Image (cartoon, rainbow, N blue to C red; front, side, top):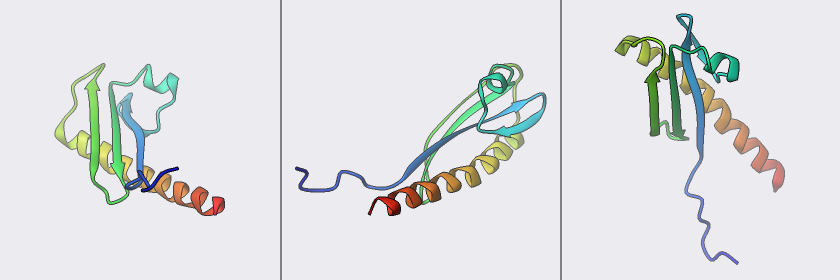
Length: 92
């Protein structure tokens, strides 16, 4: 039995990328395999980044494109955090 809850907070992760010049959220395999840029974003529920991992797989990307990808990832991550809370509340 646990004496103290080991969970300190919520964490979620998404992939974002540029495919044929278009930013996409949550790339599937066919999109990921064609992505010019592939970025994994891990964030806690307070909006702090735990991990950013990305690469220019087909073409280099600009700081502006990076910011657009991060801006696209953020609402996706918030949606995942909300879904986590919903599932946890159903368990009680």
